[in-house]
Amino acid sequence: MYDNLRSKWEFSEASECRKGLLCGMGISLEEQDRPLIGIVNSWNEYNPGHVHLKNLAERVKQGVREAGGLPVEVMTTGICDGMVLKDPKYVEIPSRNSIADQVEITAEGNFFDGMVMLSTCDSIVPGYLMAAARIDIPTIMVTGGYMPLGVCRGKEVLHIDAQDKFGTIKAGKMDIDEYNSLIENSWGMCGGCSSMTTANSMCMISEALGMSLPGNSTVCATSPKLYLMAYEAGKQIINLIKHNITARKIITPESIKNAIKLDMAVAGSSNLILHIPAIANEAGYDMPWWKYFDEASNNIPLLSHLAPSGKYNLKDLDLAGGMSAILKQLMPKLNPDCLTVTGNTISENVKKAVIYNADVIRSLDNPVMNEGGIGVLYGNLAPEGSLIKIAAVPENLMTFSGKAKVFDSLEEALTSLRNNEVNPGDALILRFMGLKGRFGTTAFTFQEELKGRKELYNSCAIITDGRFSGGTSGLSVGYVSPEAALGGPLAIIKSGDTINIDIPSRSINIDITDDEINGRLKEFKWEFPKNKYPRYLKLFVKNVGSMAKGGIWE
Image (cartoon, rainbow, N blue to C red):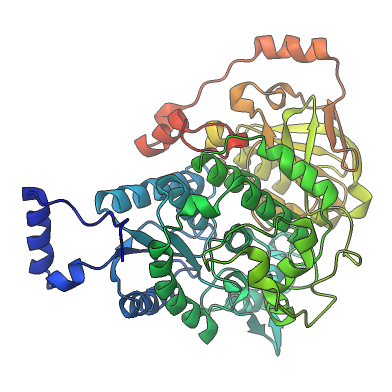
């Protein structure tokens, strides 16, 4: 029945030793003849997105056993971006590449015939998908669902309701008891934060790629449906092995383009411009992926206006029909023939989907807006591109001109903001925060404090070579490439330079001549401060590649 099992070694001293070791652990010879399935889990007790994955894994293992496989659970790193230090020793993106390596080492070292991978959060989902593309064995991703809404003072609340108030409370403009009540009650017990931050965005991308079962990305973390999906994934992985459906038969250039289009239709996290190219390049597709993001932003309308920029949350989306309903509405823009882990095409998966709320999930002829969720801006400030989350930009800031105020670190920017040194209309430059400069640090804390000062939030631009949180909103331009640490034009901006941004025209420029830019670049010098960081982060900086290729290992 199985002609393609990697776990069945030819008779040798090593294979007999392995057989004996497994027998010593209580695994019978009959079980050893089954397909060996790695249940790759990022469960831990300190990540709310992953705290329930231990129970999900048990359902996966049950499905694997009933379908005739031998499941073995292995663990990887799984940190929560909301828990980790944002700066200066930012580890989330470095952890993504490490996670991909961990999965590869374990799967290849143990000759897994297939994998079912469980994760939910920001860098773990892309790290797992990168590994699946790299290893290319039958694989299914089980994502952990969205977090239930909190309940505060008699009504359901979204975590964004609390996060958005940080700047307000810092400025002394909010009652402390009301603020504390929001902080204590706005997050649910498990799952990905219930808005279009990076966790839920990446879970949706996994499904749009075809790597998760239909509906997985928009089911509640506490729903019995999720446990049924985990069980079905355990059974289905055996079918994928029987038919030799490996990850790269699902992750193709066309399915990656489908995922990018889905990203635009839901205004997904800005971090996807890093993660999707990483998955693509691990699968062997070295293509101009940022160009496809830009093309999709001009061709794919926004079909669901989800928090943090819209009024709906993941529960609303789930009740309205979920991811299957969105994909059905978007299908005329997608490649319908892409294979998925069900063994069927993506169009076959969603043909019976129903839209229960036509305002939450719009049609192509009645979108929320015709501008896509994410746009790529080019110009003399960002020759290789930069990212803007269009759906989150206030209407009055779609075109912008302001004087630069330059900061060489996040700490410097926060100090200036807290000392009331930021003025309305400033173009706030936060540089040396890219992958080479500072591990892809986010400007999230600065952005959140700025958001609490409405006169600044509604008039200023933030421009950085670092990343943004999936909860990005406002006129926030990130991923400016080449980054400052590589000698990109961002490195030579001076305070007082005029910065012009035109989102409809997709442009971002410094109002100085090319000769002036080139002259400044000739004088530019910068070195990574190696003595400040541990070896792991120095290793990351030394080996990480271009953001445009996803920041994978060079």
